[in-house]
Image (cartoon, rainbow, N blue to C red; front, side):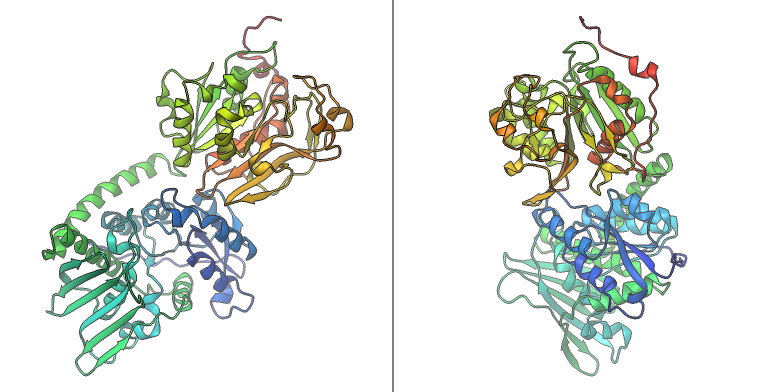
Length: 619
């Protein structure tokens, strides 16, 4: 097999603690590992290393992934771990990285920027979602001369690891067993059978040449023939008792073991590696392990026929070579990060001059984003685009337009609503600004609550012209660099939020994290009206005198998708206000999962730029 040796990479920790970043909070491994590193009672190397930052991640098409992210995120926050919005932001703050993402398909993309940064990397099982991706990971690490290893915790259980750390006899064969649940997005044995296969390889070592598989709905048997004539077998269990175990046939005795002994032995090995120690497992062995499981799948496809490992590896290596060429080409053209695409949709002209200047506003905001690295902004003027291809590859779409029954999103008998909902299911962020937050409840109320956390409802919400003062902000990426400000605008409030909450405090609804961004208390005079339309006042608005109201809010769904609502933006001249502008620009980046600078998006607007692109309107 064509694998190269990797140059040793040493870690120079800043201060007295080696800082670890964790990518993927959708598995119980994430809090389990972090508790060991961050425990106040940690000693030895564990006491000199700490998980300091994490990127939650998650996969929208795996329920056991996205449903777990909110809880495990809270678990790590309770351990003092800071959350960030991108892998690149994480890498900049740490000395070493662990990828604990449940979904092996994500690992290649997540590993690449770590390799590029030259920081040591541990990748949790499964290494990848395909053998080609696994080999590509190895090839990319060689290209960037960065060390990595991958393993489950089973390998380092004492009754298994002893066959490597302190062998007492020659292993003539082995039989392992363990749970083998299936996940449709991954090869059969990658998802959970990898534990037992890894146990088998720890005892047998490398050198398997041929694999045969027998499978039934409740059981798998993968039998390998090693180049020395030895035989090793993994039995995958999907019914009855599903413990782990191992039988080793030695030249002097037969031994039974393989019991699982927790995460600490694995985390100890990761800690040694991060401290500059040798790799506990060679990448070549990990690649062969995944080739064994891929060969077992190929045998299943062939009705149980024997499959040569060399052919499987050769085919996957050819695929991996193409993958690596593509990734390196992208790396060369975008050295910092993969571009994020944000689509801003401006509504058709309405209202008197300098009000609802959607076209001018979108063009101004796009100009303010032109120097943000790694972000591409596309504008659509005068309503829904004629060419919907503009949405292809979008990470976020923002609607700044008139709403109500004429909202662009609800036209065409629901076709557009269904289209947007498909975007949301794929993780595209949705933002709505000013009148764009208003819809007719029975047309799209449920969708807007799900997409952005709430909406304006006629005669339930109200729309006075007033001047709130925003002087306190939540600890949220959208508020980075935003200073206290006040601005006279048609600030809507009393939104119809998800679960009918008032919206002035942060909340979690079944995994959807709701955070109010701009909050202020309307005076009694504001509540008493008049409003813009209808004039009001409404008794239920007057009854809440003294209550703070949210004029901007964000939501992050359990699947990782994001949304925001912003009720300002009636008067075009308010875009002169630096903080008014910055909080919206930050929201665009956050919506697309792009990195937000520590001081937010810096921009400047001249008087000429405010005057540019205004719609021609009757006065």
